[in-house]
Length: 382
Image (cartoon, rainbow, N blue to C red; front, top):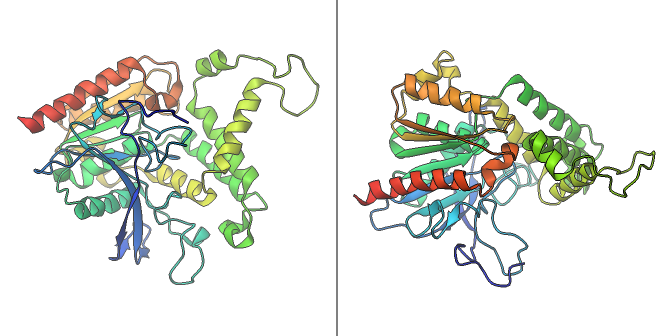
């Protein structure tokens, strides 16, 4: 809990909810008759309405990207390092919009919402959503906010995939695309990790085929295991070695199957705390959206052809120790953009933290992102 809010924080923030009564057609062939998106904003929209930046979240993220909901909050939003006065996404210059994706579990319409056709929670009946569906819903939010064009759309990991989809599907509605620690599509290995995580959830006896809300249960063990598996892939080997090594929790071997190593204790804590703040059905949906993302598929699997639709200038950032979305995957994006004759800058940041590096205040990373965003602001002001 902060005793006083830092000067470079956006401070206390209050989420807002936008309701859409117009049906939304989804890629899966189904339609949501109505839906809500919860979002937060930081900074002020200028009179010209040309300083807005959309921040897209990753798999387990949400709309609370910066600031605090109350003085009793233990920690700020997930991208506090990058959003605020004087930070790379400078709220003295930009109006930042951070929504919780459709299908989420933090206030946007999702599996825990009431299905108007049954009067009960959607559960497993909530439709599969895609990155393209998210872009459509975010565009409707932009319309509601009176934002015809984003100065930039920014995101890391699954958020970076949304940035690419924005640039391809709605090229005239963003001037800059900032893609961080992402990939043009998942590798077979990544899809495999996601499938093991889903099986952990779906095989939990308390899952009840996705309708656990009506049974008053939560598939705690399955969701915990899914998060533990995911968390291993977000960290690098060197980061885990530096943080935990082979340290024993009690300083000795107990010759049993309870927690003995510090890393085991850490993973169990991460898994248990995740269960208390995330929905199992949403986890299934988010991993499927990751699996399905492949914008080149409709262009005869030619990513450069997909990017020829884009009008935005790109910044692509990767991290040396990220093996989940390695620098090579970012370089694939850069090569396709160059082949498409699009404007692109690329930075590969030396970092030991693995995939999670995109969330952290690594000095060189913040410097690169901040320098680029100052250019975005200067372009708007000129």
